[in-house]
Image 1 (cartoon, rainbow, N blue to C red):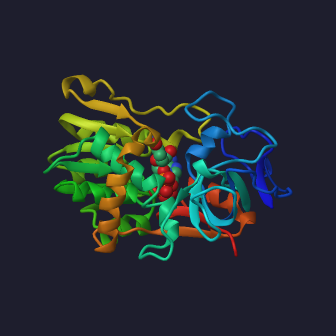
Image 2 (tube, rainbow, N blue to C red):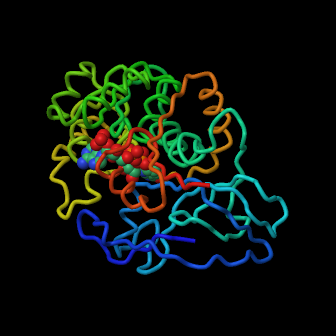
Length: 333
Ligand code: NDP
């Protein structure tokens, strides 16, 4: 089995040389364990933080150790009740071809259903639940809200804009990098407005798109996007702080937002959240989102890169904005 190791801690943008693909033997599963052949690996922005040796909500990757992350695969051998050969599962031992893990750490997903299994790493997986939890439990979107979502062409942002509408928002504005992504927001995902933040300052564009202000900002980006949102948020507006990807590879902290003081006069609520605190919403989310996917009210896109050799390239491309929808690595069978 081949697996990716972090071999040097990046400063700023990671380089391919910070990683190594190494061959290791696959051990037999012990009692209570399963052996899984991974079919899809998830690459996610939070992994950048794990490459630093700093204390955070997830521990750093060890040097010269296999990296971890979400993965989906099929059970090749099982020594655990409840799992049979051929079952499809998601688990946390990504970045590798084969995984041996405790069956308790695997979640079975329905194979052969109406949705492709890869959805369980995206729109029906961690990123979809993040969108749902951020809107429902954190921003508490309600009927008639005007909602702005940044990073809107991505794995969290695409569902976030669509779910906002399904949860009652009257107007949904999204931003993403480049004309193709901005078009995708309106033409594929049904946003009312798709802003290309690379075309003109986001503050000017947002002010124009939201003449009556916004009630909710779902933040994936931070920096200038947060500053722009603070400017147009209405009194008692809510900000769900999901991520701040504009700062993940920065060596200097961002200058914006410079207008944080408006939180007082506008009585804003700005709340960060971690999807891991909201697993309780998963059954309800799966029920609702699977239904919306089936009837076409929720549309999902994936960007798939083939081959474990290209997993690091896929991660770097994700950080550069090379994806529309969930970025996944597909391993051949
Ligand atoms: P995406 O699929 O959105 O991919 C990342 C995207 O970020 C890129 O496609 C790129 O799109 C955009 N981006 C990169 N740099 C910048 C920049 N400087 N300014 C604006 N946009 C930028 O990833 P995810 O959907 O998986 O994650 C989105 C956010 O949600 C991240 O911040 C992530 O950390 C966070 N997150 C938080 C979770 C939580 O529990 N709080 C859980 C999961 C994700 P573009 O071309 O538009 O620039």
